[in-house]
Length: 191
Image 1 (spheres, rainbow, N blue to C red):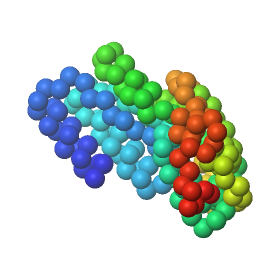
Image 2 (cartoon, one colour):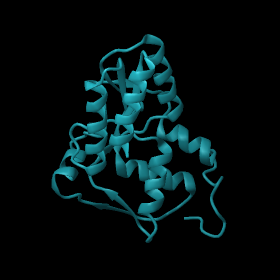
Image 3 (cartoon, rainbow, N blue to C red):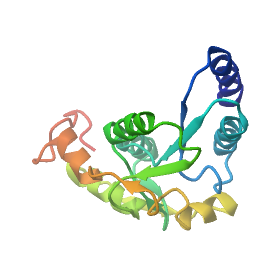
């Protein structure tokens, strides 16, 4: 859908005489070998090769996505996390600000990256999330095999070269759960 949708959008934009297309992508699409990332990379290539002036912004994951992953990883009891994997979240509002800035500056014909203010091991994200929720679940690191796991452990899902946002993972947790760590936790299932 992303590739075909982008191809169609580019055709329509060219016909309409659009002067600047901003494409939102993901940090790591050029190096992490996953099917979804491959499709995002193909869509980027269409933008670059197209007739419409362009800019591309790659972002690291949003905190909400990361929390969704942690909820999924903890369904069976312990929180299963990728071992030795650096992670970096960026606030969606800061990405929106970056997009507005790109639009204001006009086509850059460049790929820019935006990540959050800190890169930490994924298990530290999990520990902070558990603390904020008042949970004592254990964390179980698992080794991701193959090239995908290796590129993730090498930090290809993070950026230190691009601009970095200001809002941290802890800031997100404080907003969601408050300083007590109990806000938003279900009484039926506190962990």
